[in-house]
Picture (cartoon, rainbow, N blue to C red):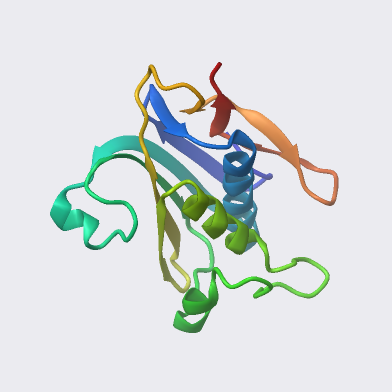
Length: 178
């Protein structure tokens, strides 16, 4: 599978993952992470998206503010792009901060991702090394199969376009269960 023409897209989405939330905001979150990864790999690379249900222990929750000790859906989005230096990592979620030119980005993508995660009572962490790549880990509260209003995360494909009109594909779909 490809995301753009030179980017290999790999997904490993555990079946039966549910979170309680807004499918539009979650889709926007995945889209923004995908677009940022694509932009960080202008010469190609690999975008890996993983999602699985994990139990966060009381000890682990100390490193995950706001998550607490509970069942979560851990989503990992990793790219083999240019990575970020320390200053960029510190400012990554800051609204209007961008490493892109003025004509290619608003600096809102990761701020929107951060806001979506926090609005879903989750946690996001970022690790990055220059010339190696960037990894985001997102923890969202897991829901069981009987919860009303839950969002299903699955590995179905869906397309979305960028400003150039080109179509790109992502592998994570957030849909509201009725």
